[in-house]
Image (cartoon, rainbow, N blue to C red; front, side, top):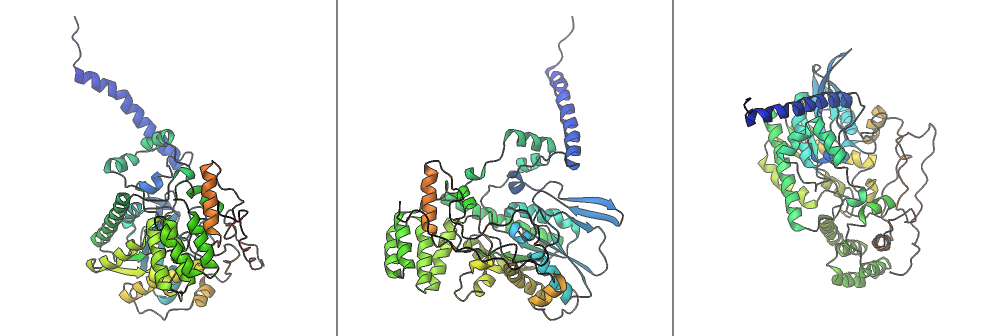
Length: 495
């Protein structure tokens, strides 16, 4: 009579088909993904998980290169062997650091205007004996956790300097060690993408009312910055950390932003609408007094800031704008995180601070960043990116990290004459402008959303929409027409 197989043997034999299947699936899916037939990445994972195969070595006719390429990033080829006198700068962060809309993962050729391009052009002019290479390793929609992973993985590029600009988009919970490890496996990514589709924009929240959640976000950010500093120190590479500029006056009144935000943002009260009417009519004292009864609403803080600004009290206005952004960041950098970077800097040897927030504030007589420097909630126009490159360049030159004596700083026009003489900027994008009807627009959109009607194009736009695609204007195109002023909404009274 045959004896029964031991349990352990039966388990092993049962697992063999699964192991073989997993192996075959891994090989097949990896090849299909390399050839571009499939994409196993979920947009949510491209924000929360470490990048997969971020840097690869490839052979070309010109020699062996590192290819930096991942979802939401520019594809960049960097020679494995450094050229004589080459100085490599790896710049990383989110889409602000990437230079959206002038450079992004969908369009990466033919446009000038990002921080990386301003740095490349000016440093090449000031250090003509050096071969400056600014590697744009930023990625759209990134949290500081993923940026920390990018810094770690780009060590293989042998950088001479890191520039890190991160702090927008904070709020996604960090991946666990197990999640990060499984994410490296293509079969797991494919299965996850099939079983757990991404949330729609309307299902993703902007507002973070839970104070414990905010404390966790801050703690994660501080831990990630500490990791970035430790990686740079271990690699022996100096580091420039930047505060981020904040479009303090931004409110989501265009149709696309409203569809994303109205179901999660707190309601704009009638009192806020009427107080803003008073302030805009010159009755700032009455408007400010009325807002005292509305302070349980974050929008009252935003209204107070604007009322104080209209009254000429810019210090109070800036303070209330920043308090509002702390409560309703809308993917912007929290002012408290900028403050923490300044306070922590003395504890980090070999790290320089580029204070981009202060640069934006100093450029405005009121000390409140000019919304006209921005395109939207956090991206800037080319003049804004030029301004933001200034403190980074000062930090690099003052620290004497690049060998040689720098030439005097060129003017903006001199940089453009040398690097981008066509200057095709303004015909592409219009500056952000605050919709003067924002309290009514927001309130009406929120009331509509409660009844199941998402905002449509009837909502007045504060600026013309960005052109589809990234096609440059035709040669000889004239200047862009001025944005149409916002018209009063079709609901004159407060609903």
